[in-house]
Length: 398
Image 1: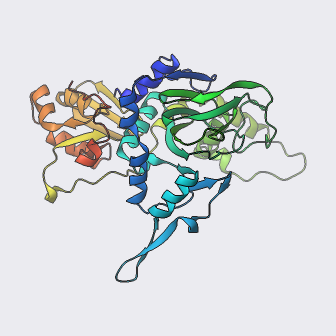
Image 2 (image 1 turned 135 degrees about the vertical axis):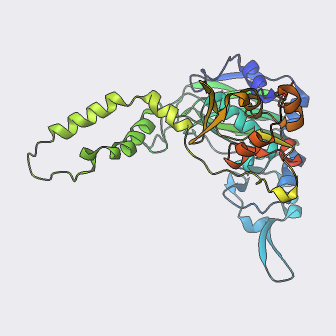
Image 3 (image 1 turned 30 degrees about the vertical axis):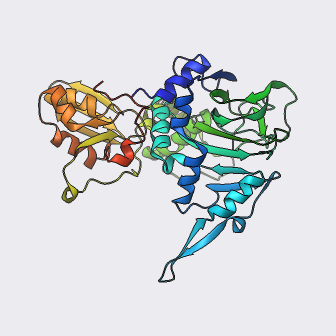
């Protein structure tokens, strides 16, 4: 899957792939205004808020560095039967934004097909889980105070301007769950300046940073922060702790007798680590089962006309003799060898129209596509989902 935003981020930062992710601070510019507005605009963000029942912590508002109480901009919409649904009061929200405020929407990829497709593309690219948080700041509102994140971030300035300060780490590779609270900011500056439309910035985990529009006058800023939660040595050990239960010796109670001989247990643990590498863990992580959030395929609504692969990570497609083995999301599905060209198109990550696929491969593919949908590897390509790819993802048939 070739996503225009992923390609633009690589070009802006001078990267070729995700190997530099987390290794050092980087900045650049996309230089494509049309791409920015296609990803998100302030009005589209507000439209998303208007049409959904969003609540904190996914939807928050800050003024003067403090969180605004939800009661200031939420009201309950009551149905004729007395059912109450919390909704954003758009008039009150508009008033607060006119005064100057920062609106934060976490995990916008769960609400917006464009951001969903972008995050999935970044996941396939980085081999890590990705979510996007969006920040809309108006007039002279301030942002969060100086802080660090426990994950790597790529920030894309979509519209307007915002002033940033980035400092070095004060603890190497800090973590959310850590042996040190890491509360003292570093004094070593890395970069300070104004992010303008199209600017891209990579801030590795642990780098202190803050952003504000204080002193900027009238105007606004809209930026998207893509967060990459990378696997660590601690993640590997936690995975080992789960998998060690397969071996009998690790399931026995520990001997509390003073001076008890634990040599056998310790040697078994060392052997287990030697036999199960970090590479094994990373491969297993990408094959974990997950719960899909796709629109289901219901046959009575009509035939399947198109699909798109929605696995968190790129499926593995292997030809083994006369059988094609597709492995993804904890599933292994076998197909006849003849299905290989269709599978490569249907599982490309881009939108695949079944008629176009059939023309390209020369045979009927509906049965293969329906199997992929029923197994949870693909979703029906309804217009709403398709809109998230338009102008951003090249069709696999191009």
